[in-house]
Length: 288
Ligand code: SF4
Picture (cartoon, rainbow, N blue to C red):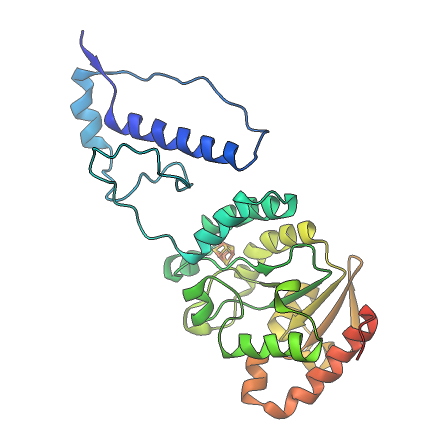
């Protein structure tokens, strides 16, 4: 009986091998190499299988990684059409290539986040997930509520006008470089129309937040706005009551203050934020 290997099996095998080779080049040593399994499909069954398998237009949906290095692909063939990588995916790949253990640990979480569809509406409407950015060894983490339109487009938290104001608070106010702190949100997907996160969405995303914080091990968290403060502290008090004092979250000192977007609408509240930031700076031993 004549047998042939199904083309999709060949393509899947090639993608998996490229991915494993790439991970080895980036320094990963703990993955086990499994023997290649030759799968042969009887020709009589091939037509049936072809008909039943969906034909992907772009790259194969599996494995969930894009090949990092396509230099070894044969040049005599038509180049495969690959979808343009999102900024979020590029950031994940940078983390995966890092030799730093915390970056690699964060990459694993970011991969899970990028495939997450726990919040159906958010997963269907997002451009990409927005994981977090900054120094994974920072003792200070800033936590907002959720990505907005700019963040959804760029794959990074706090990049719009509110993000610029946060940068000013960090760099002009605290005299720290933005890249020396870590910035994340309660949610990793944009709620449509910038509505507030639903409690169930915050609960869904809590696991990722906690995994990020366990890796970064900050000593201080600055919560920006009521939604971030209430969700992180599991406290429904208004932000006016939560701000101005330090809270304890499993040994992490948490300071809550107004969200930069609120300050854009209410510039007079900047003095309260500065009062809060000074409390944080004093606690951190920073010169005011
Ligand atoms: S917000 Fe969080 S839990 Fe919800 S779909 Fe996005 S990554 Fe998943």
